Amino acid sequence: MADLTNREIEILNREIDKQGLTYTRLQNELLDHLCCDIEAKMDEGVEFLKAFEEVRSRLENRRIQEIQEETLLLINQKYRMMKKFMYILGTIAPSLLIIGAIFKLQHWPGASVLIVLGSFLLGAVYLPVFAMVSMRDTRKKEKRVNKPLYLVGVITGFIFITGVLFKIMHWPGAGIALAFSVLLTVALFIPILVIQALKDKENQVQSFSILIFILAFMAINIMVFALKVSKNVMTSMVISAKEHMVTSSMVESANTLFLESANLVNQLSPDRLDQANFIHEKTDALDHFIQEIMVDILLATHDDNRLAVAADGSIDLNKANYFDVYKSTELIIFGNEVNPGKGEVLLKSLETHKELLLAHAGPELDRIIDDLLDTGIEDTDQAPRLEYSFRQTPMIGAINTLSNLQFKLRFLEGEVLKELL
Amino acid sequence: MISKDLLKGTLKTIVLKLLEENDRMYGYEITREVERLTEGKVQLSWGALYPALHKLESDHLITSEEESIGKRVRKYYRLTESGTSAAKEKVREFIDFVTVMGRVLDTGPSLNLA
Image (cartoon, rainbow over all chains, first blue to last red; front, side, top):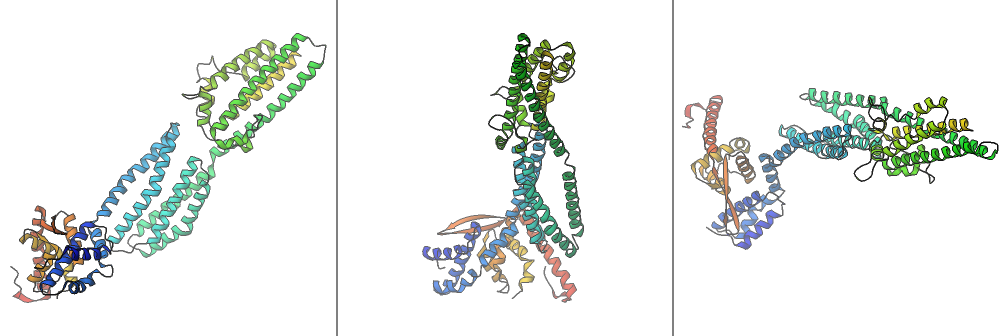
């Protein structure tokens, strides 16, 4: 029996290599087969090159690649792995999302990471893998694969999931992505699905249910958007906070003016004038401290909010955003491991201020002062004042409460000043 | 020559049967053996044979071992335990099929397969 030289084997190997096989076990086998074939011909007295020419036809027209494809299809290697992968992902991705949602609800740290990861797995990994497995299943049943359906489905699903993720994370562009996914669904996915259902009588029930689910899901989405409960609450709080800011600055100017004119009038008792100036000074200090807390909260919410804070520390809520973020309120009021919260200091200052006002005001003002500056320290039935005002409170809720406090301080200042002078 | 369509369903049966009779074989050897047994009437193309062999292997009916022969690697196949019983089952099934087909197509009692 003729034995091929190493050089000859190398030539054959290169020929097979040209076909771009990736499955080496098959490549080795085909090489051996080719060698045997040529050796048999050489045994009959044919020259190597001539024998090679004779078997060469087998190497043409991508036939070797077809063998590889068929082999891989038959042994299902890729498919089996993908299917396993799909099952694992199908369990992990929604679990991450559910755990993330619970974390978000409880305001535990790490919610965002879980949600982003879960969405990514679902949209960018699970969806394409599912499409591939499903397409493979269809092909195995020797049916035509509706490629546009899968393509549009995966793209639309991906854009939709991205939109939802962006919405949850308050990233810009969520609205566009969601609108685009709805557009794709209505203009492309549903028509393709309907045509598919009309053509493929066998799976009509399946296609029909998918269609119904998509329509129902879209309806629910639109309803949720229509409700916009939380958004309206946000808006009303923004309006209310703006009003507090306007009125308290008006009362502040009035008080300052009143005090200045009183200082100019000489026949007033200097003792009372001193008291009035002292109260004005203290109110100013507390007012500034509250303003400082509000600015801190705004800036801790998002960097963009620095645009809403003027150089003199005044706040323009028209330029602020991210009103529904919770973490900044708690961070500034209750602090963290590094920074102590300002809440306790605020409460103590309020208590001191209340004592000061009570000491200088007549008995008829006592009740109003008590009511307006209720620090709730003696109140044991309720959670501590700070807790129920600022725990799990969105940013605008805190701003609303604090600006209201500023207004009340200015109002009481005015009342006490009027009584003193 | 026997047509590819007819062969398609029986290729596995042929491979299993050959491996049952010969301890271990490699791809080229199988095609030669089939050619010899059928006096050239059945020629297995490698495009049909190798996918079938890999499928049988992934179904654990046969195992393979690779052996270096000079510069190239030769892959031998042999039956597994379940492959041995599958071979018997397949052959019996095929004989049943041929018998039934014989009756349907009325080739008469001349068919002798035992």
